[in-house]
Image (cartoon, rainbow, N blue to C red):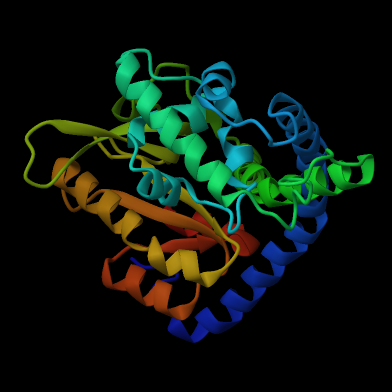
Length: 318
């Protein structure tokens, strides 16, 4: 039985309430997260500028010594370079740039000749595209004044801040949603399943957060583990009954939502491929989920609960 997907007359009001709830939380949390990120990022930029002698020396030796400096260098160009754009312009190994970006290291198995060649190409692109409006001292005889240096560090730090703060904001949204589900379940005397308990071994009246559930990929015999945000075994579950699977989703704008709307459908197909049509997989939504998105979920027979109306979880047998 459907709970929300078959009631389009409520969608408009629910969307408005969900956007309001998301915006209210964002205005309270995001500025603090951004300021915190900017303080740390500014210090990192200042260290990077010092290591490059105020961007006057960017070479292979520097990139070997400080591979984690690459994000700062990308934000020092005009225009700032996305990771894929740098890879394309420099014609270098994607794995090299990804390891430098994500781990601040160099690939241990990459040959020395290839490594030196690619680092030289990266350094060449950075030097060629260094932003002259930020690093106004490049090309002149005297170095930067304290004021010029501070201005440059602040601008680059602001460019980097979104990359640092946005994941932190997304993580905080996920944690808030999981906490809401956990608190709602505990208020109804559900208890946390013992550690290591599998999805098909859960006792009635228990739940687990971030639990792996096996699924089946199309055109593949090997099963795949699907991480599910909340797995709940109803108190009145019968022997052999599958738990309710809940995927927490939050969105700060509708553009990304509709770009990623196929993700949940893929999970549902993988779960059905293993557990059959009786698998129950629902979404826990907060934010900019518009009618187009909801129509897509309805067509895939995926139901949902809005965070601002969390008590609808009870209608799924909880």
